[in-house]
Image (cartoon, rainbow, N blue to C red; front, side):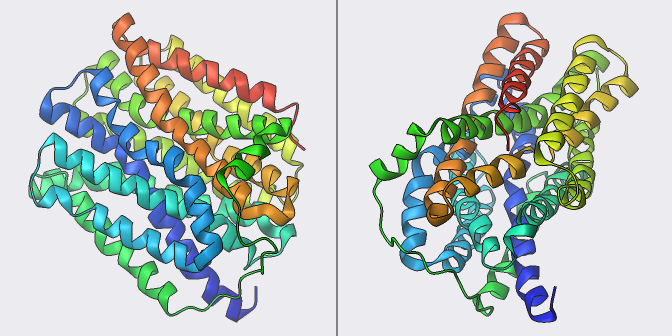
Length: 380
């Protein structure tokens, strides 16, 4: 990249990092569950307060983005994310946590809808899939650090919520940087569209299958995020501060997978990369089903991290190529699929409580992998 483009690209990458704050909801939910002695079913409803807003606001945000532009929408998203980190320091109870999670979900919806389309104004289409994966790489770094920072704040301050204070400060950096960074955005032929016009895209079978693919991908992501520590606590009788590192392990290997994907996606066909990713996750699910010792369980979690690292970028890229002149609508629709994180944790909690074991959650995750295997036949 030329120097000028690098200076534009850097705050966008930092915004991707801030996007990863939403993944802290997994470890935060486990701490909230422990603090308030919640069941799996009730605790797994907490992420729904984050990801429900993707279902409600994705299309309105894409409409807003058409009016105010992509950069301004990203700036707004970072501001809402900053505000979301503050309520737990006013008072710590379940209602306040729900408010904080809801604001985090709204801010992340704004960011997810606008950030990838903004990236299309910075990099060429030939490098877009790799650049998206590189953005996910930065997003995953934040997710990887969340459990580590939470454990550190417990040791240093006796309060895991200091994690939110640290993330609040960090979110200000790309917010201020982007305010002073002009970006030339692609002119959009159609400035306005309606809900109905956007949902009509789902009549295209390819768009529908890819949309469900996003639902499934995010279901797996939040599922492992929530379930991995619980599996270690259930099978190895570990404390949460130790078991929480399983989430960091997952995101560490997602970082590695995203980093590799950023380069491999420019060399290897998307279909081949997609099939390889699914195969790794299938092996990971098998490990979580059959093993009861630490190393094999860690290997299974790591395989999920590698396998799930590039799924979103591949699906999103395929969807964006279907309607090049309607990228904002397609982006809004695909990001709505992130609401899958509001659906699958509830299913996992219900099945786990019914079986009295986290095997229930792994069964749901295995079903999700089965759908992605089907979708691999449709990936270009």
